[in-house]
Image 1 (cartoon, rainbow, N blue to C red):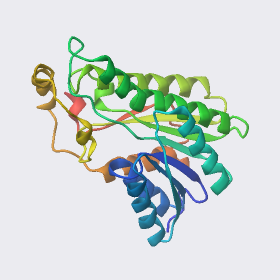
Image 2: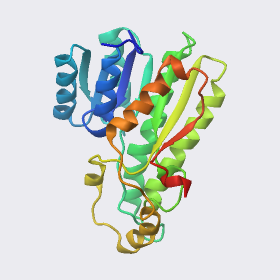
Image 3: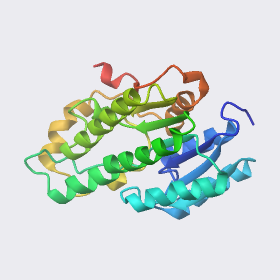
Image 4: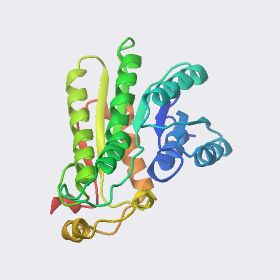
Length: 254
């Protein structure tokens, strides 16, 4: 095993599948101890089993990222298991149904913001409490091309990911003198199961955003996101703070 993250403890939400699982496995291969948090505990267990089979250290915890108490329990369990926390990756997220603002329901808006944005605020707030006393820590948020552009999803997802970009930049600035770095990755189309969270797709919204989707290159892989994440959470990126890094094959260059 390599040692770019040797001895670091990393919490990763949504670690049971897709980008979260890829990051968990890669970070572990570089010496990190992993807290694999996911609402689907069976999936999180599978990630942990793969890490342990490869000689790494990890444990899983069922976490509802939309619930503040569940986030706090995640941090408490991490401290109890590994004694300290060095890296927090806010990866868990869901899609909306492509609805524009004229059609979006209150329930859809609240659900998407709870999972995509409130969760980032809760976990970042807890991370700051953990990192400030030791003047050290890394936060990595998974935003989206939908967080920097307007024709990639419906209004709820788009607004929620724009908010993640804002949280990232503000946190990076506020704590830049405290040894805490906060960055975000803005993935383009990635081969994951996030589309399964969609339902009752809005016909008008889907047709309108299809123009933006049509400019997307071939979808990337979860491992390609994980490779970028590894750099951003490692000491190699110690001078990178407040960055929103597009990993989209050039999609947003258009």
